[in-house]
Length: 190
Image (cartoon, rainbow, N blue to C red):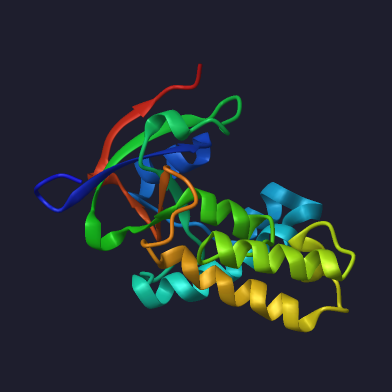
């Protein structure tokens, strides 16, 4: 974080995002973008994304036109999942527009998994999964047979916003919008 209350963040985005920024000065993610990008597996992404949107809106209210978050990284080396034709965008964003969190916890949510409060809690939850003959948390989440476990998994996701619990050393950020005035550099695809 800078001393002026801003944070540097990076993201990989398609040309349409860069064009939208150039034409409109702002970019928002719409639900239809996620449906188009992930097609038949979009439901798997939308459950965690919808949960995130509901919770994140309580932390930083979304501006008009924003439906989903723009995923940002606090370290440019973490942008490893960009594809051919993607642009790397470096932005300097006012801190009050950013929701920061531990990437390891977000990956657990994307995998429909439990976020433990500590190692003891993690072992307890793993035991409860194994006792039911399950091999992964997501089996309890996606099945209709374990509603109590699914509620426990979903409730644990609130720990995403608890900075005292760390599962990784990497930080991510989410923005409701990306504004032209925040852009420091846009790198062409390689």
